[in-house]
Image 1 (tube, rainbow, N blue to C red):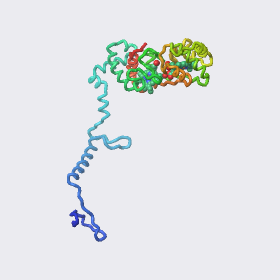
Image 2: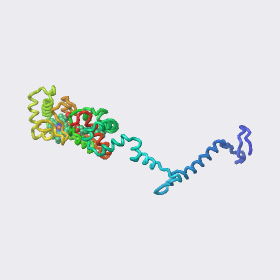
Image 3: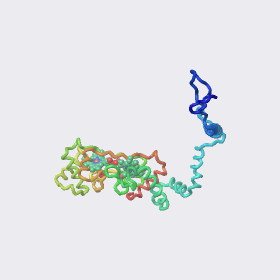
Image 4: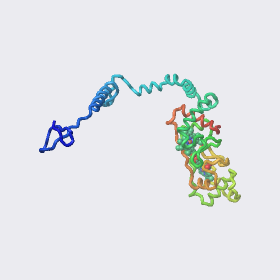
Length: 287
Ligand code: HEC
Ligand code: HEC
């Protein structure tokens, strides 16, 4: 090996083109050993554990280790029973009961309230709010006693499983501005709103409401009390989904409304749906 005079770094000894030499900078010993150790580790790992893909399968490793098998073991009914006996028993009971009978079992309702709260928080609260209070104009309040689709356990369960899509047609192209204002007046008077203070318009609106062109009564009922099968709300209770100010009602009438509740039937288990049904029912407005 030759030595480079200027900075004392060794060269490999070869020279090209007369004076072109190559420095020899060996890796530190510790680095080399760590490198060899990782190679040995990798080979040992391949032999012991699942490692290489092989067509449709993979090398299993001699230890026969499988994360999935371990998970299945930990999630098995026996393991759950052993680790969380109370939870196991409650879920087992729920699987054999209807939401209505669950509501009558006060011990079970303690469990339903705590686990329903978590389920509701994960799945429903982003729209309906953490207490089910809803957002006016967007998501209905689930904690009051006004229901678009009915508040019995069976109604609530059906809403959750299938989802709902309320369709209130737009009337902006069927009625003049003046006519829309008149129907709004009539509705306001049904709900006892203070702004509905023009008896003449109320009378005109009443005729339009029951007339064949707008046919509001077909969905909201002759008495304006709504039809749960259509999700058409009661217009006489002063509980407004889309707001009860005159401007909000006029907007509803002119442009229509199209509330969509997603379906959860294939996203939640049967037990989770029962728990949520009982939980929503007990938020305050269950029938
Ligand atoms: C993406 C927003 C969204 C999510 C998430 C959501 N909902 Fe809804 N929900 C709605 C809307 C919008 C309506 C009103 C539908 C309509 O106007 O027809 C509704 C209606 C309902 C109703 C009917 C209320 C009535 O007055 O009859 C119930 C009950 C309900 N939701 C429960 C739930 C539960 C339980 C969950 C969680 C599993 C949930 N919702 C998740 C948007 C949502
Ligand atoms: C095809 C059936 C149908 C007809 C016809 C209909 N509605 Fe509706 N209406 C609905 C439904 C369904 C909703 C709820 C919409 C939703 O859930 O998004 C609704 C909502 C409303 C609301 C909002 C209530 C609230 O709580 O905010 C008002 C007001 C209303 N309708 C008034 C009328 C009037 C007035 C007419 C006649 C001009 C009429 N509707 C015609 C089905 C109908």
